[in-house]
Amino acid sequence: MKFFYSKIKSGFLLATALFFVVTSCEDFLEEQPSTLIDADYVYTTEGGLKSGVVSLYKFERDRYDNSTEDFMGSVLMSSRGDLTFSRSGYTGLMGRYERGTSPVDQGTNFASSLFWKHFYNMANKATAIINAAETLEGIDEDTRAQILSEAKFFRAHSYFYLYRMYNNIYVTTETITVDNAFDVINDKSTEQEIFALINSDLNFAIDNLEWSDTFGRVTKGTAKHVKAKVAMWQGNWTEAKNQAVSLIEEGPHGLVSSTADVFAGDRNNSESLFVIQSQDDLLGGGNTTMMNANYVTQYFQISGIESNNEQGGRGFSRILPNLYLLNLLAEDPNDTRDDDTYFRLKYYYTSGDRIGEEVDDYAAITDLDNPSSNYTSYYQRMHPSCIKFSQEDGNEESYLIRGNVTVYRLAETYLIAAEAIMRSSGDPLPYINAVRTRAGATPVTTVNQQTILDERARELAFEGQRWFTLKRMGQSVIDFQMTNYAGDGEYFPANLGSKDPRENWRSHFINWPISQNDLDLLGSDYPQNNGYN
Image (cartoon, rainbow, N blue to C red; front, top):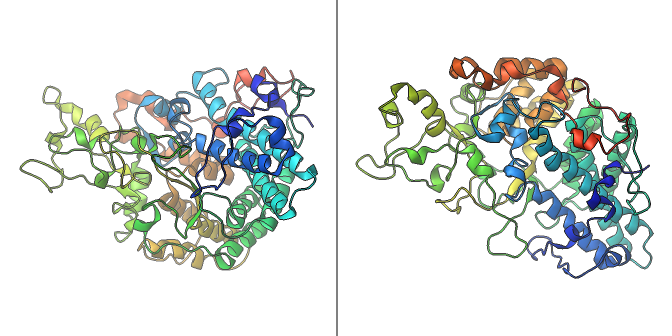
């Protein structure tokens, strides 16, 4: 099989430069790749292969850094779904399905860079490392297994992400060379081929990775978690249950004691299964990011409030929890997830005569020359914020902050276990109620699909999983959720109707369009996703 994206110029060059722009600190990945090492060193020495593995982590972190296109790589998937109100900016246009809806629009081109190209390049680099590590002589066998396990995890991770977004994808186990870089690919891989490769890679990783490693590196638990997610997509409920329960019961991980602890500090806690590592004042420590700024309102524009980390940091209010999500959180008054842990509902004066008092006066946000403005100003300045990505030590005067980002955590494993058991056999209540009890919410007594969907909303909103969950549950589910709950519907001014994702949603949006620029590099018969032709 030939890897089709390698027709891009950087593909046949093997993009070796990206293997070595990262210098990682001992606290993170314990590797020190040289910037002067060439491709021969990468594929013919043990040290080179280790450096190549480190580059995969850097590749993964790139999607979260501010250096990516319009910083949408880390927030775009959260903007598209039934739990958010996408207020402004190009990310808002994407989230409201005003952009990214045809093969030729600019939003689709953004997505091509942030997802299609990104994950195919990562898969290509992982494949090159895998093929070299499998044949290299004189290498310590434990080291070989570790290199292969991490590289195979990232290849599986890349293809799984691409499949969930685009559906019509092509997978390969062949390394790009100058000889095959321009071979034309004429058809997508079958679903069977895609899942066979993903599962083979994850099985190897599970068998050879340890339960514990340096925070920031993938482990047996990371691979089991993703394997359970893959099984859910295949409808293999028994496999999903077995992987999730094994991770929960056999691994060293555990839910932290309170929702306040989940995203506290550096996020490297017992619940964490994979956390992007970033550190100030360290070469290779990552770039600053605007993730948090997208999710936090501009409360500091109200006279008497300065931006401060306690209330979420400095934000520009682009992607907000909508009324549907807020109402789900409010169903149980004891649920702590909207008590300034995952979401902040209230803001307080920090200076002047009312210091310490709650802002509850709409006059504070109303333009006196345009009294009707308080509606849109409320969304901009006083609406609840997601604070999962705020930093306790962030720069309070800047939209740019640097900090660790949780990718996978054990609370989702519990909800996977609950759903898989609900769809197969056994008692799902202990698993879903472990998450609810940690949040202070009353345990549920029955579980159905909507119970699972609602609990995933409360626990995992804004973590990049929701849109994929809706798609996995099927066309009727995503159609219903999007047309009934996306955005804020009638609560947002009717004269801004073009901004209503409920009206803009079309069933074929369940798959993203493949950019025409990417299709042009493929064979003439390569299939675009349905609805975009």
